[in-house]
Length: 84
Image (cartoon, rainbow, N blue to C red):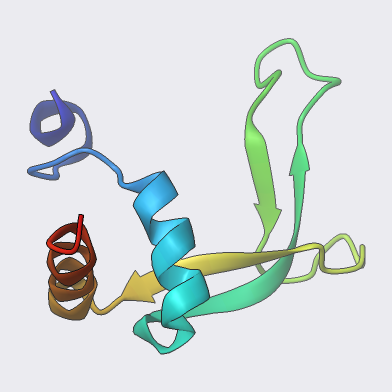
């Protein structure tokens, strides 16, 4: 499903990435941005809106991750899961 819909060969790993970030933040690269959820538009209700370029002048309230060291992340996951 993910490959067909999003062009990736696997699903997102949101929860493991949070833990990995707490353990090794150097694996991630991102940018502070203002992030909101659209609540006024019938067409885009519920969509996450990231003000990547600071157009709204709203204060940054989230770190938006754009890149990750995939090999190091999976090595960390395997190492930590191997301890269970």
